[in-house]
Amino acid sequence: MRREFSRIVRIVGFVAVALTVIGFMAACAKPVSKDYAIVFKNTGNPYGDKQMSGFKAGIEEQGFKAILQAPAQPTAEAQIQIIESLISQKVAAICIVGNDFDALQPVLTKAKTAGIKVFSLDSAVNPASRLTHVNQADSAKIGSTLVEAAFDMSGGAGDIAILSATSQASNQNLWIDYMKKDLQDPKYAKLNLVKIAYGDDIRDKSVSEAEGLLQSFPKLKVIIAPTTVGIAAAGKVLTDKKLQGKVFLTGLGLPSEMATYIENGACPYMFLWNPIDVGYLGAYTGTALVKGTITGAVGDKFKAGRLGDYTITKAADGGTEVLLGPPFKFDKTNIEDWKTVY
Ligand code: RAM
Image (cartoon, rainbow, N blue to C red):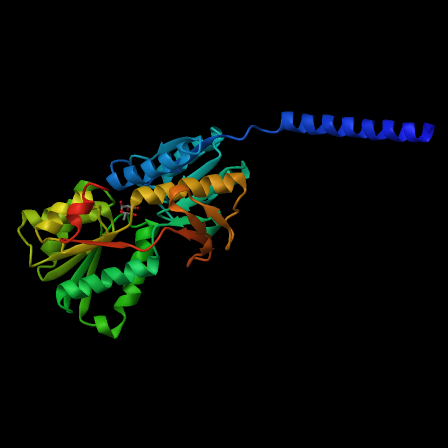
């Protein structure tokens, strides 16, 4: 009886100590931040605004706070300063739209060491700097689709040029690499890539780069602009110069900015995905990483709100990614329906 009593006392004592320790640990644990940050390439890009609005919607509908940031210039240096300040603010996650594949690694590693979940979206940072990447569409498919469009618009032969964003933008560079690989195919032997110009996703610079291409290459048949800023700038230049039917434009554009140029024939067709959905998928990737539902490993699964279920897969750069879906084609038959959507 006495032994039984002292056993009970020991158990009660043990439970009390355990509860005290758990309570102490809970009191000491850092409160989990409810702030989720996205850092876009630069300000003044309507595509970036739409992507960030999707991120904000996805974060806020889960009861958290979204911090939307973008530097004035599309450089890695400017993004590093923003990330330093987000580290001091102790945000829960940083979703980076990289202005450089490798240059952000030291600051992103610092963020990771501080317990912040780091992942990229739209424009990837290298696998060592991220847990995973939110990819808008299959990169190889984007490259081959744009080369095939140039082939089609040029009638299979002639000078073509690329008007890109910055020379360091990892998403554009990846797509351009795939385009160059595709152009090796004997089918495209008569297509002559004369120049890759960089408008830096700045409207005025993109306009003058487009004008420069026309001046330097009078026989130019197609401009491929794999950036929404570049394609809209080139659309304006071709329209102002009344070059519809002589020089064709294709690439990745926002229906809202490109409707005029699709309707007037400067751009027979182009492609994109829904940038709001890219941001929204990023929001759910971030919260899943913070909750621990996913770690960013191949095979991890999570639910992205209204978009449904996603699985992390292997990315071509050796890291992992989550893919939104296939790119969508916009032409005269559907642009009217899409120009008010995004
Ligand atoms: C521009 C940006 C963005 C890219 C789109 C297609 O707005 O460079 O990163 O995804 O174009």
